[in-house]
Amino acid sequence: MRNIHKNPEPKSLTEHRCNTNTDYDNYAAKDDLRASLIGEQRGICCYCMQRIYPDSDKMKIEHWQCQDLYPERQLEYKNLLGACKGDEGQKPDRQHCDTKKGNLNLSFNPTDPAHDVEGKIRFLGDGTIAANEERCDREINEVLNLNQGTLTRNRKAVLEAFRQGLIQANPSDADLRKQLAKWNGDNGGELAPFCQVVVYYLQKKIARMK
Image (cartoon, rainbow, N blue to C red; front, top):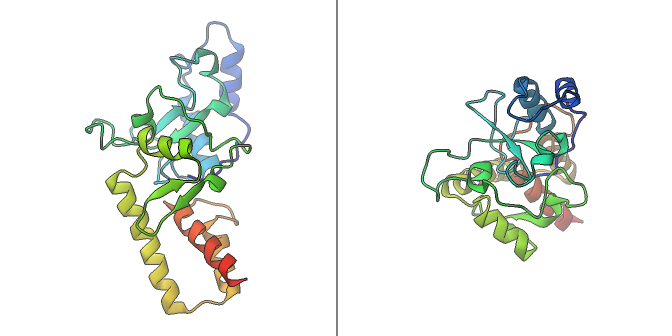
């Protein structure tokens, strides 16, 4: 995960909410919503960071606080996120992200600056994701299942490929900072899948060089 900056909501959502007898199900312009969420998340899932696309069969619109328990928030834009399909239809131990989460609650929201998920989370060399806080760590594993086998292997592969290229390049501190800016998306555009794994690695490496 990484922190997400929320942009203004789609005009169609604002207009829909102003009508009478409106809810999430009768909001017809969900394509607008998907495009907006993917734009502000820069092309990656709000939880696992794999690539998502603005099609109903390739992503899910996640309600951070679920519709069943928090119906008053079903059209609240800051409650909405773009998530991957999370191995929907697979066995429960294979599912992850929103599909695994269902109606469960999380104590952290990647869109809330006060929660600062980037400050809570660590990415280990074997692809494992862990948290500094016990509750957050438990939710990463039990609610979101972010250490599901495929996700862990993908994170490890991204990190190993990057580290191998780094060894060959023998970079300076300035080179490392350029790479950090690139993987952190400082120049805008889509983020690379699982980018935060490399960002975390570079931040630690640069800090050790000081």
